[in-house]
Structures are given as structure tokens and as C-alpha cells.
Image (cartoon, rainbow, N blue to C red):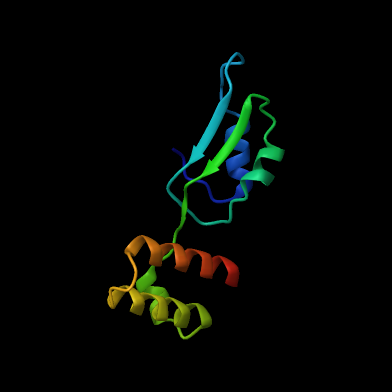
Length: 107
């Protein structure tokens, strides 16, 4: 998989893929991302007709230790949510998802 710095880079990469015209494709995105991904919007801009679906399994690329130290709303939020992990109230996966959703909604 490639590293992309923007939605435009991702769309260009997909549009330049050499795909078999006689097959239908579902693209699954994985790894860490530095930008928001709306799969419906991206699919609308993909010009390859046999790409039928794009699934996003990526996570935000952030450093929780650095965010936790910030004296900002994000820092306070991350610190409070991570306290729940430290207390064993939620799993690591649940905490990471909560942080991802929270940070995404602050931008």
C-alpha cells in the first residue's frame, strides 16, 4: 500500500490502477491516515467504472502521549478518555475508537 498525504492523492492513485476490465473491485483502505476519508465522496470522484465499493478500515495517525500533554480541548479530551483505559473501564480498541471519533469531530 502507498502513503497518501491527501484525498486527492488517494483518488489519483485509484484512477491510475491497472485493473482487469472484466472484473469488479472493492478497495479496502488500511493503515493510518492524516486526512479525513469519506468513501462515498471518493467513490464519486473515481473514474474507474469497475470499482464498485471502497471500504475504510484506516485509523487516524496521532500520538496519544503528545496529545495528552497539550493544554487544549483535544488534550483534555484525550487525557480524560485515557484515564478510562487506565482504570480498566473499557478496552483499548473502544478507547481508540472514542478518541478517533472525538478528535474527528473537533476538527
